[in-house]
Image (tube, rainbow, N blue to C red; front, side):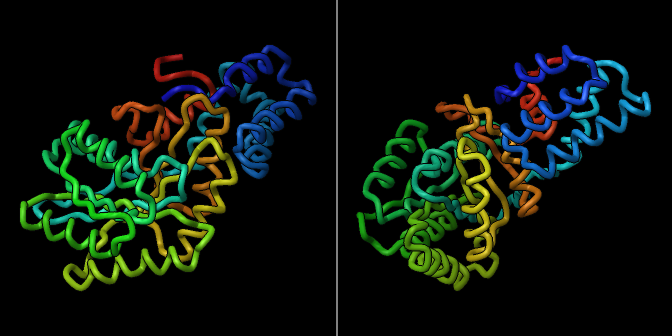
Length: 296
């Protein structure tokens, strides 16, 4: 996982004495600017200040190690359960512009390429936008994936059911459903999502097993409100955070976890299919501190 731009600032700060009070003020400002949130930043800085005063932390290396350990302790993650031999339905939600449709294709590619699930069915149930259908079609052709789609304006629940039915008939383990993202018409959107769920559950009471929200990591703390709206209205089981490449605001992941306690399953770090990666707390913390994936 690439760095989020905080590393250079920290390297500059940690050239100064650890007992300099202005050091702690600037460190807290830097953590807040990286979207860790005021509460988290304050708690991290106070913990470091206490350890320096007690002389348990004396060097720059010890101080950075403490911050990383404390930050890692604020987040929990999980691996989404894979039920082989049964049909796993993943509904993917998110507002327009977060990279939802491309993320769906990348998810299917990940399950095939990394997990070893040969065929994943995709459903183009964002029928409100013709561009969404064509975009998903282009990705499926590029990655040689299976797609069920209809025309613009078609019944989204019908598309989702057709994909579920086709996946079951062909013995697929996964069907991933793209959905509309018109948050400015929240009530209509949530009713459409609820209808998809009702239609699927008529045939499989456990469907969808997963409801994942895609959020734009470059929006920082603004993404938390989006997640809250979807979670309260629909009920989410996990998150995918995109557009973390080239942003210094990756700290928003901490705020999202603290607010919603939802597992973060994947992060998007670029345009290529392989740039969608499983979320790792260790890699994430190293990226926040500009350390990359290698040893210190």
